[in-house]
Image (cartoon, rainbow, N blue to C red):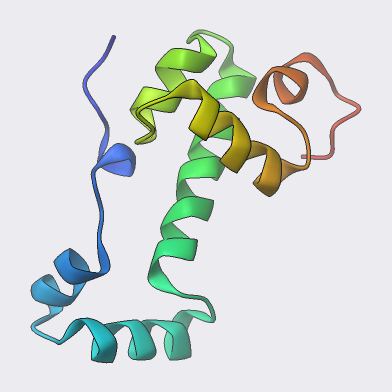
Length: 100
């Protein structure tokens, strides 16, 4: 298995806030005001878009993709991906019937 990419790093609001020199609550409020969604929702969507590209590529297993985008179990990754894409990762990978 390949090492985690930055997409899979254990991001937290506290870590983002520290980098910005802000409190967690101030950072979260400002992030939401500027981006339109909470920081961790943005990170989740970023991870899922990256996972979708890896699924389309077809070279990695779903388990390896889950690890690469920061999930310790493929079950957790499957739940989050299905919530994001509307279908589980395996179904997404199989078909053009799934909107991209």
